[in-house]
Amino acid sequence: MTGTTVKICGLQDVEVLKSLIQMPVDYTGFIFAKSRRQVTAEQAAELIEVLHSRPSTGRPASVGVFLNPEREEIDEVLKRAPLDFIQLHGQESPAFCDDLRRQYGVKVIKVLSLDPGGSEAHALKLNSYLNHIDVLLLDTHDPVYGGGSGETFAWDQIPAYQNWSRSAGIPLMAAGGLTPENVQTLVQSYAPDGVDVSSGVESNGVKDIAKITAFVERVKGL
Image (cartoon, rainbow, N blue to C red; front, top):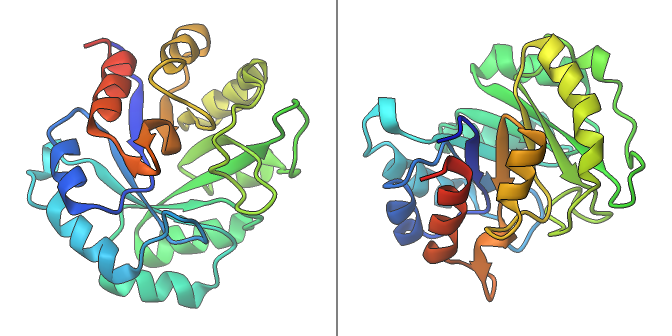
């Protein structure tokens, strides 16, 4: 069994979540940024209530996904939906990340969007984020939504960012085009601390429990 964590993102359905929390999933993601998987604060609150039906020791962490949010948007969501993590997909500053951590007591996942061809789509001065974020997530750049493209990036970029994350003492997660068919290769070849999937465990745009199960099994080596 690997120690790689699993995040299932883009959750919208209570029944899917009830099945998912029976599995060794570490993070559940709720998207507040513009997306076909977008949820409202009220929907997220209902889903988080399902999470909280589990004992805290075995409960997946809740992650809210945002793209260049205003503080007012974060305020409104957190009033209704008690998230554990805020995931930031845009050009949010280190000061903004740190402010969220201090004011709300949440942890911050900062996303670095990488071009599928191998070049960085958005310059992110990683050292300026040192001590201001809790997780670094590599994802494939999408020109409209920032992430969630369903495409992989060039995985041979991972080691350079892994070196930075290890020296910073924070986990590095990888997303972008992952599926039950390719995730085992990623984990065995590059050993990220965690993997993040959304469209890769869907059928016809809907979360597929069989695909989620296969994905988790292949990451965890069950």
